[in-house]
Image (cartoon, rainbow over all chains, first blue to last red; front, side, top):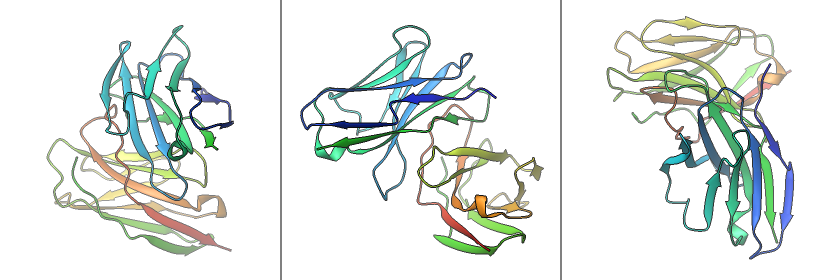
Length: 114
Length: 110
């Protein structure tokens, strides 16, 4: 069964460093998302991406964040200068078309900022 | 999306049916009811969705009241692996972002 994959599973970084989280969505999917979950809190939407551009973003997704689909398969989330409060699980998700119902989530990347 | 209300936690014995309620009294006519779950530290997982008719798949059944103001997710024979946080959403279509609430933490007891 096709699945969304994410790498790395765990990333540790120093405050102020840049990190790139990688996702490989399911191959024929058209809509892509990043969500995050701070430990013990609810899952929060960050950004959605369609047709090579951001379709919606939350207040969390400020200038420190960017997304890219560089090669038609990978979907990346970059945090330019990490802060302690960026420590969280980051989940990538994708869906085939807008009329479809199931968003498929990846296993997540745990980001720890020291 | 209409606001949903779920109990914060529930317990169920292994092998019994788990019935998880959700209130969505402000649901609009074109909104579906969706259920997802999140097993500890894993990515959320789609379970089922429906508009007004009851729905069943290999994972669960969804019962929606006639006035569509509430619904119940039924796991017919709960197993320990069904221990998770269960989220109820109302959305007009699948590609919209998911806005997670606190959900219901379901614990299946042996």
